Length: 112
Length: 114
Image (tube, rainbow over all chains, first blue to last red; front, side, top):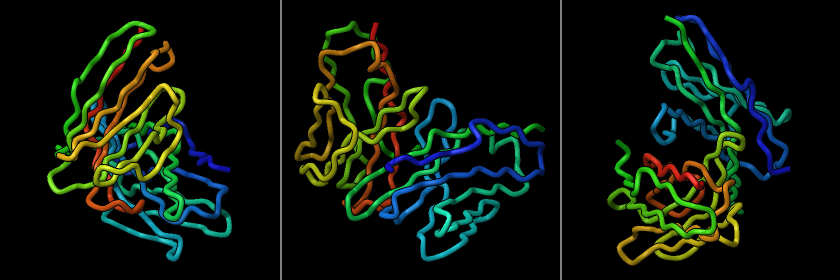
């Protein structure tokens, strides 16, 4: 019940295409859903985050879509660029109990 | 650069040994978090400290312990090391102690247990 299932494990997209990464959770206590971007040799960095009271949040080329009833959320990267090549992690946080659960990561490669 | 520093960058040791990983949070941040990242398990939350006090505990083994000092730097102690403890260990910091504060991650310490 504490898991966050992330898919796909790896993704190859052409430059200019749309990259989509999905996450699913079970515990309804989760109330904050951040996405992190990690480049090789670096620590993860917060990309964008959403709360379950909204269904979508957009920041530049990055959009989170959230489906509360299905307990799923996804990251969409529009107009994907080679510089977006990185590993992406979704996370689910339960504020009241300080639970921080991360997905297993998606390695994205954007071809030039 | 996130402003979070971790030392050492790499650490190679033998099974059964004990090591200490150090983290200095961003200036002004009161919370420190420790995470373990292994190839097969992704990022696992270990423990959080806020202003010197333990705030939350995750999947931290009994062989592992941590503390946050008055100057807010933190140390993660790993003892009786096993091969399976080989991983990247990340420290993160945030301004506040609530779980929805943005966390800033350091560059990590790569631990190899031989």
